[in-house]
Length: 195
Image (cartoon, rainbow, N blue to C red):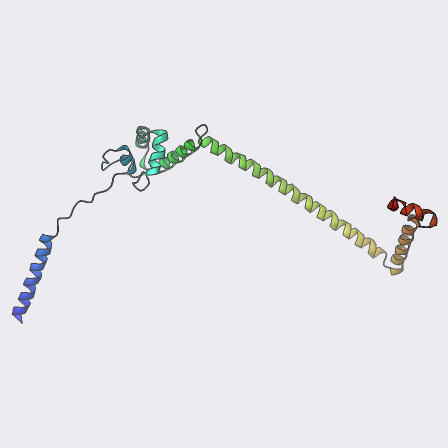
């Protein structure tokens, strides 16, 4: 039993030594250059100012900003800012460059003007809707007041005979206002139809 344990240990040690010698030494991790250095075709150094903000997966960000501001201005601008503000500055530069490419004359100012115009139009629509709401509420209040007055008048005349008399009076007045058809005006009534 002792000889088999020694053989197993020796085999394991030989295998570990072979695996160690056969595997290549650990190679240094090669990072691809940032999008800015790749576009500018220069070597990306370890402490590249542009690398944290223009990753290789988003080359369009640097392309747009570079087209409007230029690489040296972007680098100078980032170096003047504290690191806590650089990410926001890059986002602003990319947004402004995008707006400048879409609208070369007004850039961001044109977008701001359009948004302010929309705000003014929406405020006008809101004021109009509020005025219509107030008008509707006033009409509803007037209608309720009329209904209450009518109910008060009806309660002061509780007799059903009075309301029936009023109805008969209104009906007779209506009939007296209407001209009766007789033989004299019947012909004139039908005359336009036969002409």
